[in-house]
Length: 306
Image 1 (tube, helix red, strand yellow):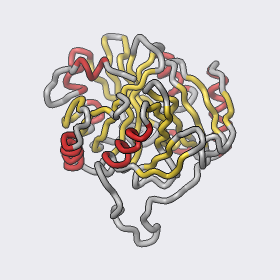
Image 2 (image 1 turned 135 degrees about the vertical axis):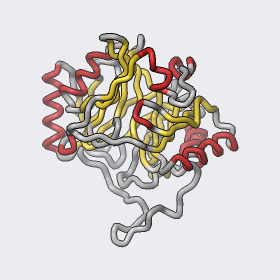
Image 3 (image 1 turned 60 degrees about the vertical axis):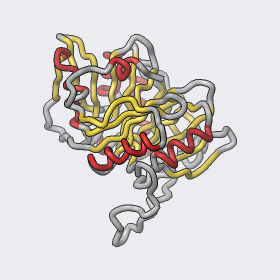
Image 4 (image 1 turned 90 degrees about the horizontal axis):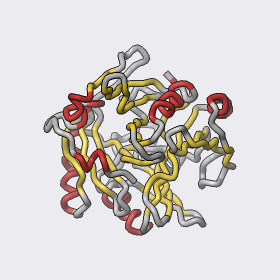
């Protein structure tokens, strides 16, 4: 398990069509906190219980989707080791200087076989979570909206699924935690670099580099239901839920930001250790795997990406 190498998802940079609408959505509705803006018009956000300066970057654009997802590594030595791993796999890398994103150190950037850009970094400015580290309170009194705790993972669609999964396992040292298979063909892979059910997931798809959703953790099933109330109160476009996944056992709801990027907020009900078995769902039971209660697929949920 890569807890001494890649620690966790660090941030996601999303393309948005209207920066003011996006900031209202992510801050007022979801409860993220704005921490900075830069001369490129990018807005930096964090969830309330994150210590690093940002976990979401909103980038003004004329298209929606994901610019890149970044993972934080433990040390600079790990950063250069993973850079070597990536190159040895046959994937080109680029070093992005410290400060290109405000408060973030040097990054190693590359495009994985499925067409998604990923960055690795070791250093990011810490701003704290508003709670003292001595005798801390259980939560911040400044939380609003859905009260998102942390940026948790992304689900991505790509056109070279097998190579992308192999790349993450062999070059980045992730572990396969759960999968959906159709005979000998893997349809979906849920990968972990920690004790979480997944830190990233991939779906086999005909187009490269697509985002299905960016996901944020809530504290409980009751908080997911409260998020559903906010979605209705604020007329946020609802996709699916609230419901439970069979895959990863997450309690979840999906909806769209004003630019058409799908968001998920969920409560966690799973974990894994290095000796945990790989969990497998078969294609004939994929409805229950994705939506455990209804046991039926939702076509729009599978088809709409950004």
